[in-house]
Image (cartoon, rainbow, N blue to C red; front, side):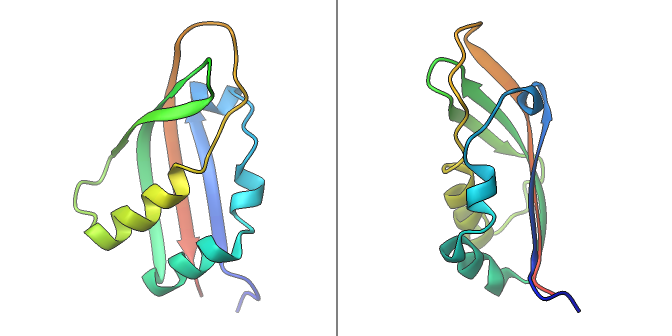
Length: 104
């Protein structure tokens, strides 16, 4: 049995190339972990778009549309805290954000 729950956030597509500043902090955040714990386990993939100039996510869509409201609420609290370093080139970067969590 693991001492700590598994909690990973993975970036895919063009997003993987953009430097982000918050994931390392997020996966150690006790308030986020306490939100995830009641869910047991989770594997979700979201399509995401970020505005390059601000580094903020402005579009999110789950690939799995059967997520309950509880899951959606927790996930959106996590995703809205992911920020990227602003870049001057282009307007929008698209990709995927995957969240894996297992409390066991």
